[in-house]
Figure (spheres, rainbow, N blue to C red):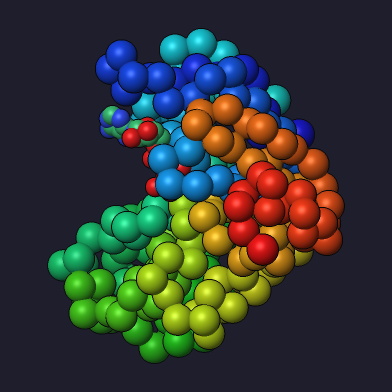
Amino acid sequence: MILEVDGVDTFYGETQALFGASLAIEHAKVFALLGPNGAGKTTMLRSILGLTRPRRGAVRFDGHDVTRNPTHEIARAGIGWVPDDRRLCPTLSVARNLSIAQKRTRFRNWSVKEAAAIFSPLEYLMERDCENLSGGEMQMVAIARALVGSPGLVLFDEPSQGLAPKIVGDVLATILRMKDEGIASLVVEQNAEIALSVADHAAVIDRGRIVWTGEAATLRDDRGLRQRLLGVQ
Ligand SMILES: Nc1ncnc2c1ncn2[C@@H]1O[C@H](COP(=O)(O)OP(=O)(O)OP(=O)(O)O)[C@@H](O)[C@H]1O
């Protein structure tokens, strides 16, 4: 397993957001974490990254317990993050946003050029300041920035949010390209259909509890199960 989250309880102050939540992601596989608004999907990503530290339970990445490690060490170990609000440095160029994020890890090491080449338009935007990019272009830069961190696992928070269908297709194709390169992904989505179209495994979270986990194909093919777990067709 590249990632194991084991019985995690996470709180915001006194409010508990995750209750004994567990999931396991295999090397070079795509895992979809699905669930409605407020279910705890972002909190799961924050718990993995150490941004909101679990009060109980453990997070193991690549065989090492990282539960108490600072966020920058967790990133340096090879976990990339594509946040829903992108978080690029707006006044810096695309090239600079990528070069400051570059890291070497024990996984495949990506150059800025290689990461930018994953989306063809990026190569032509390298000198553009990030504040002058479209939403779709910002998402491409955010993914390329995760890649130059040379990750073994990338966490995607609602990657389809606010994007045109064509761009969503490009993002999904990139997740599969990354998988071919040996990179696992954890895709957090409210849109089950989008995430399940690329996922190998999936889990459903509801009010802070993992209520189902299994093969993505099972959820994809069983409309009744999807309806029962997610309330969608
Ligand atoms: N900073 C915070 N302080 C207090 N409670 C929070 C905070 N962030 C999230 N929560 C609460 O924790 C619970 C889980 O939120 P979380 O953002 O993880 O859900 P989510 O599944 O990602 O939802 P969404 O799809 O709307 O982003 C919610 O009840 C939310 O109100």
